[in-house]
Length: 456
Image 1 (cartoon, rainbow, N blue to C red):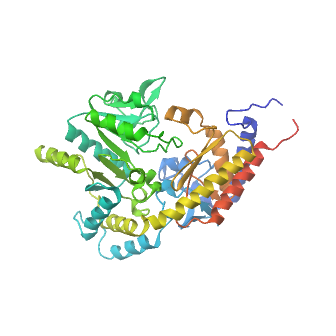
Image 2: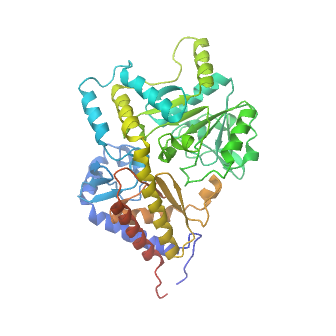
Image 3: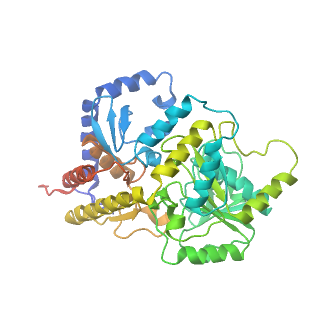
């Protein structure tokens, strides 16, 4: 047989054979999920309430019965060690007791009023303490927070142009869906229904390339301090210190999206590494799983933004939604910031993530695969290259969707869940060494199936 070895070190035929076996195994293990998927098909587009739920490697959607702590139970009774955690939305575990209790209490006293309460003031104070920025506004999602911040920044600076990094992800903000294709800014073809030319007001450069930061009239640089959604891409030593100087020299602003890098600690990557952005976005995990987000301003930016609003004609600003800062969201943020976003909670998460990363490296080396492992706080990821990529183009080049699907599905069939997008794993306060060992054991078994020597 002619075996095709990919850059991943795995024969393509083995990947395809494993994927076929695991799909059959999944169908056999999950009859109730299959029935529920069939039931949903006539009413729900693509058979799911959000089409992203079809991005899992499963032949039909896995349906959840319960999620608690670091585990979820599907409708067929399998208890899974969950390292996806709602793609970070449940970074502090599923249904944390302090958040669930706060929600239950508040639910008896009102759900939404479009008016502030004491919780909002306390959350503002806590956010300022955690992230070092004095002024805050709320949103329902990090996508909204990023979108709203771009409006504030453009209004405050009088500049239209945004700069992002190739391969970035900032939720559903249209402006960021521009990639470098053969070195040229190109609007992403997957962006449905877009009628405007985004390249007119969005510039895109490679991460870690200081020479590319020729900003000119750029209003702001919008970035994750560590790229996390094209596989993790770490900043090179000294990158952010020099980048911040360049951004300031051009009169531009730095907006850091901490939605995923919040795994770095109670003040995100920003406080853990001493960065000084003009604005910060925090979402997903901020409410312990409740839909909510917040974005903070430096004093100088807040003053300019407030002046722009006061000088503008009356009417809708295009910023905010009716349910923003509803009573449930604010009480959830207060509980999370007070009880979960603390050094005492993060320290064991980080220690366990280090054990997970070390275990992954050991298994990868045992199977002689040219893969690397990267860790950012409670988050770890393996990538199909010997050294961590330094920019989005390199990270995209080493991706292998078919191998990812095979690995993810094989782990799921062994009762371990990781994020369906690339190979990310997240540790929460309820994750134990037992959960980590279950993942490592399953990972070792799957790699054995992919690499074991056989007669050709």
